[in-house]
Length: 202
View 1 (cartoon, rainbow, N blue to C red):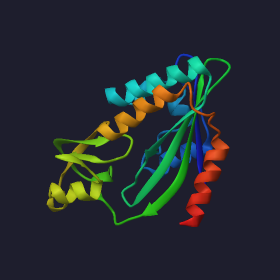
View 2 (tube, one colour; view 1 turned 120 degrees about the vertical axis):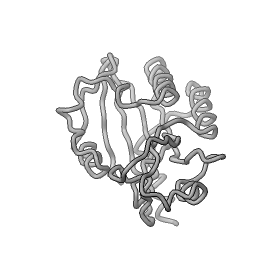
View 3 (cartoon, rainbow, N blue to C red; view 1 turned 45 degrees about the vertical axis):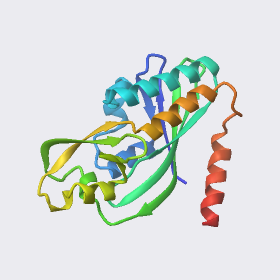
């Protein structure tokens, strides 16, 4: 089970990323994302859409205020695979925060050109949920269904992807914040162990 760490200081500037984080960035087509290139830069620089940024900031404020570790599921899909992950935000004594992103499951699939950053793009914009990776195409659809619904497989230039948050993820985030003070303590090791056990049974 792969595990990636990013740490920010009290001013929300990136202070550290581990080697696994750098390697994962390179695997996802962004080899220039190294410790040297990101250290000292604001975390918010890398979260362009306002809705996701607002949730991250609310979550960070809650973790700093309560000292509790909070975790939220998300997807980090590649063109040829689905990745189911969970991000844990951990308070640090110096006012900083540590983000632990854990790859819980990975499933291969036929390549989806829409997720290939090297594929030629038009000026058209298409909204994708930053968390579950569903695409807004009338309703919110899995990317393969959206490609079929919008007939994107026939195009030589695909829309650019902009990010937002779908209603289901928005509701889930709000519940996470509402129950953060009263829920049971979160253990990264225990949650990963549980996920690995479930995966082994399937």
